[in-house]
Image 1 (tube, rainbow, N blue to C red):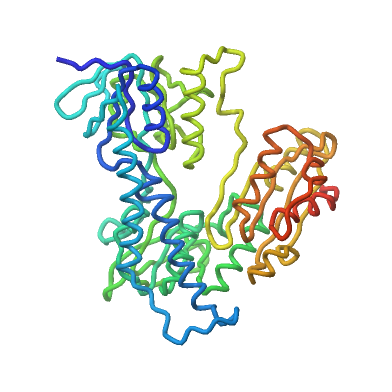
Image 2: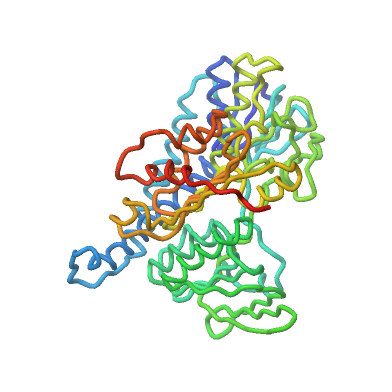
Length: 468
């Protein structure tokens, strides 16, 4: 006999639990299904553990440079990786258990552990039972992409998930992928004491960013001893002499590099292959992401997809915003004229290297394309972090701040903050963009001294025309 619910949520990542609790509190008999780890990627193998590890790595980095601040540490700095992992595990455990206890303690919400697969457009099979509901929400997230490289299947390699079990210091960590995940691990393990080499198949790191951002970030990381190999194409991998050997050929040159361990950081794929989506009629694109409209509805009425699995955002904050959109549209009585939509949000994200890279809206490359398409003009401003008092006082003057503005409307088009506390300071810019206010609102504001944010009005007061 099937069990009947008003709603089923598959997956307990960032958006699923909040939505399930809202549904339950609204009186809907709701089931939430989790096959493995409560809290999903962010809590277990993503944001929470990596930022906890980054904190340990920064502590080691600051200790090594304490003499620069007049603080003398007589003993040798040593990183105990077993204790580093234990601290990370404790933080993750608290977060994951918190999610599980929250769900289990919510009235009208049933927690079911097992692998949920569609049995039809209104039913989900979990273990040996079938759950029925008129509303089904998919929040199954993604996992690390494993590229098809000759020899890779014959060796042991690491991903962002398996790195969470490492309690030792790799002698020489090879990282395949010079983007956000790869660079965070690169700096982290270099600060722990590993030799680190990043292999990027393109000509520069974080290629979606402007070239000055890539160059500045590479300079920051190289100064800490991280090595880079670019145009790493036509790879072959083998285990030899107790280590990992990677041969590369870019058409003109061949080279080989050897390391002790290999970390794959070349992107993410959605967890859709084993969901039985074909039995429900839910469409996916050629990359396996579930196709949704701007209100997160799939091709099947009554089924929605949230978080990384829908391809409309790859961050914890976009996943949570998916929940907010659905909660507003389904539970808060929004009518068609005021329904919330994915297209209303402004693109924003951060790379949590030290210093962090924070981004909002368009970059310079985007704005130049916009100028060519629309015939409009833009203003641009750039300021080195060495001008920021907070950065000088902390001895962390690397990076810069830049902003782009519509010359006619004075609307902020985008901003990049690569520097100390940039991941926090950028929210003042983001909030003004959401308010639809002109950049002069920030320019004329009085900010607190000494902070990073206090230089943003100065930055905005020195805008210059951006050449097409």
